[in-house]
Image (cartoon, rainbow, N blue to C red; front, side, top):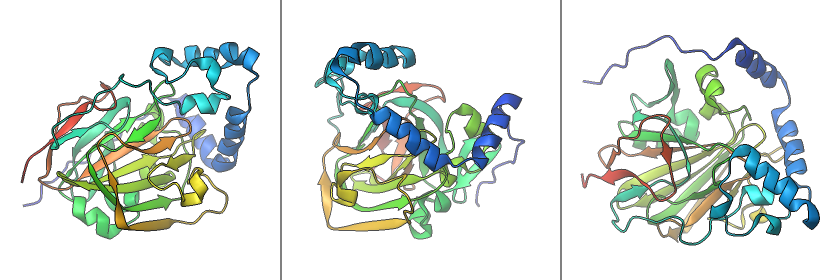
Length: 302
């Protein structure tokens, strides 16, 4: 018998945030995000980098000691935003059946995929089919589990593979660029399935994993390290007049645990989907911090 999930009244954010989100829904989100992106790409003179880029880091709470390079070595705010980590500040599991967090971030919702639906927030659900824009792939995850991780501006914004394996398929789905903060998650129906996103599928010892990188307002731009020929290595998302696109890889692209696969050029959210019976999620409460390489699930050897 299929488990029935009780319907509950959604929790709403403040009146102020509802007004902001309503206004953003009527504005040209992609164009405005591209404008903010151009500002973030503006070169900062070397003499001003400590003040401008260092000031930005301090304002949003970035741990500058973890960055690969000193603040003054980055030429723009966006270049600093997609900084790499200094070698040795993260570790990866040695056990092939351990799933590692692909990002630094804050745990959102997690749990079972009921009748093809994932929990977004209290009283709000969205479907795997709409998130992935692929009913056949979504069917593979029905009855499995999912985990949502939100990246705030202070977090490291490169995305790594959670297991060793192969990538045989990826899809870009154009969409909205609404915020993905707590207020938006509470208020906007099917938010993650509405926003623009880049999805890749990683298959390894714990089965198939969908890694969905969700774009957002002031973000919009996601690049694909697993396919540097896609748009000549530039970002895939928030491109004018882009259409949905699927790419298949034959032979598949081999990846080792911890390899970089994508990057946000500002912050957003990652949703992970797992097949039924293949993993057991760790006990991660909403609001908990996770770090790249931290164990988030264990294989069940089903």
